[in-house]
Length: 544
Image (cartoon, rainbow, N blue to C red; front, side, top):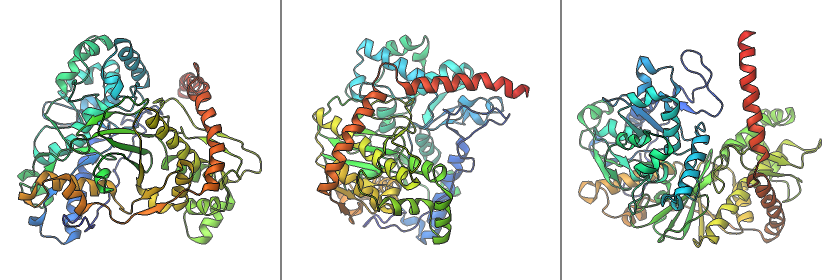
């Protein structure tokens, strides 16, 4: 909970999703590695538990609560029946993977994404410029086509499909609505020319245009009111009914007002398990490999571009869990600190270029600018003398190299970025990482201090939705000035380090093109071989 007066954190509540990401279905069927499924009930439980706990911990009078804001990863969607119940809760569908929530990093629809992209380019569909020329498998549209083709029973039974964020808003308000950010970035909608046409969807698969009838509810801009807390939900939460609930938004996007951004020309990097980058501009231009450009989806009157990287913190976590020695584990135990801290401490003692390593940051595919989930990570230069913290530093550097590539694409497209801000869990924990970013980007990086950027952003949007008459604000500028981040740490590039990184970046760019842009990428062939081998081995394991 945050103060509507100055954005101060009043209380917090954190809860892990009880089931996490599913690895198997109730009948024991092991899910493919590319799948990322969850139970909708987990979201319902976490929503009501954390709101109730945060209110109780704050000691506030519930009557003083101005509004509630909801943000969730996207596209993370769920099939619902006529009564609004998730299909995975129907006994007839508990063992069908396509009845479950598909998390943003579900990559099972890569083949559908490639087909949809090729078809849209062939037909010269207008939405492709806004989509960066490529449809990403993380988006809702290819995931829906995957479901339509692989699970016709689920498709037929589903009365509608909704982003999980919109479903949570529905649980609180009873209203079926759609946040424009989800519709714009993940279903290719725009105010200027609508979304994918019936003709295009039918060309993708006969009958697939019926999906348009299963996407229901009015589209709401960022900061709009989706409705008011119902008595039923209010009783569960211990709150008065009638509290304003804002339209849903994408988790990374809501951090823009939290960072104090009120206008154009700035890029915000939200650095966590992955990186989402949001750039505000007064114009819409085609930028290769972006994840969308949507008007009014982040701030009224602004076009918001989304780009980013599919693995950042997840990549570092892999190194801390899988690429450490007994020496590192013993030192962490002796010092009573995490493996991450030990790796960072030793990595900070190294000069740029000293490790002799170079990595590609595609450990969960490439989100921008290649938009290819089938690409994979790479470390070049390994030797018998290579230390775990050298690998760790190479991954830190690779993340910044990947972001420099994205920024250069924006600049070439005519969308200059004058200032780079950063928020997220890693930002305050790892000054080395922030300095590497500044050195590689050759720009100052303005690191925010907000511990829960998405939560504060949602609170700001809730205050905007409530309006001054209900205790909030009538304009985004007022809300952001009052509640946005005010404590900023500036990391400035070191000229000597930047010069070394320029050399390394030229090598990174060569690897980027060789492994990401070739007609027959070796990483695709490796993945294909891996999948074929697993399919061959599965029956043998069952017989054994």
